[in-house]
Amino acid sequence: MKIDRIELREIHLQLVAPFETSFGVTTERRIILVKVFSEGLHGWGECTCNEGPFYNHEGTDTAWLVLRDYVAPYTIGKEINTPEDASGLSASIRGNKMARAAVETAIWDLEAKRRGIPLWQLLGGTQEEIPCGVSLGLQATDAALLKKVETELAAGYQRIKLKIKPGRDYEMVKAVRKEHPNIRLTVDANSAYTLGDIETLRRLDEFNLMLIEQPLAYDDIIDHAELQRQIKSPICLDESILSVDDARKALGIGACRIINIKLGRVAGHTESRKIETYCRERGVPVWCGGMLEAGIGRAHNIAMATEAGFVLPGDVSASKRYWTEDIIIPEVEVSPAGTIRRPTGPGIGFEVNEKRIEALTVRKEVIG
Ligand code: OSB
Ligand code: MG
Image 1 (cartoon, rainbow, N blue to C red):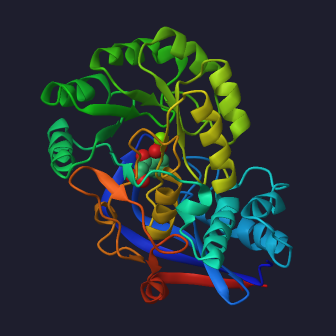
Image 2: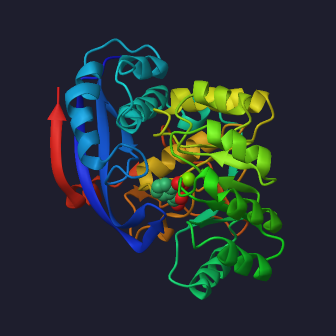
């Protein structure tokens, strides 16, 4: 197939509650959606970057530019035999993987629709249901956090992740662990610590955490390996893993024991599958990370998380935790057992609510 044209849209969507991490607060998402057209069919992708360059170097405006001036022109009119080819077309672009993934994932959706099969099936997914957790942002008080934990456990979520940062760590985690001695509990620092904080991080060993996510620098594996030698809690890398090569190196030097795979961060389904396979063959658990996605990104995450290596609960949760109304129909729902059932329709398996998207659009550009 050949892609005839690519439509970019920026939509604005208000979160139901502000989401605070060690690097900032998000109240409204500025999301780029990508629609790729070929031979009368189309596929959808969502760019998962944050608004500004604080999680990684990408942001909505730079991703728009990279998509418009590089990824789209490199893709349009080229012969694509498999979705893996699509990943290769933009491979000469350094970094900017979330921008690249927006088009790459849209082409996977399109290919699955062309074949009339669900995307999870095209990806080789085997799990009928995926286990879900929640990521709780920093709250003003421990009491407010505890209330959120109660709500999410009552909804059935299988794992609670707490955002931490220096000064909001030991006592806060202790308060949650005291109330909930047996739940699956994790923490995510988003790179807020350094090796100078080993004492603080080691004290978290008291709380039987399933993992500590990305405690040190966003681009580091060396210091993480040193830290992992000195603490018992398994380190899980998020920001540092951009490819299967990164996964190989990080695991090789003992920088982590678990990997969080985010589709955008690794440039799409092609690389994500390589990481999943590499880890599964070595008994290393992976799980699906989240970037506060709207429905299209969420649907891609669900398809990815059906792959066999995704054995731990992911940050894939119900649409209503994020939005008053999502951009897909039906919205993503989580069962009382804390699982999402894979969809049955072709492609991403959810209907895209184009009317709602049109109403939310603040800019649009068609390339090709
Ligand atoms: O580090 O996992 C992260 C959100 C934005 C940027 C980075 C992260 C997150 C989350 C939210 O933790 C996960 C979600 O619910 O989508
Ligand atoms: Mg993270």
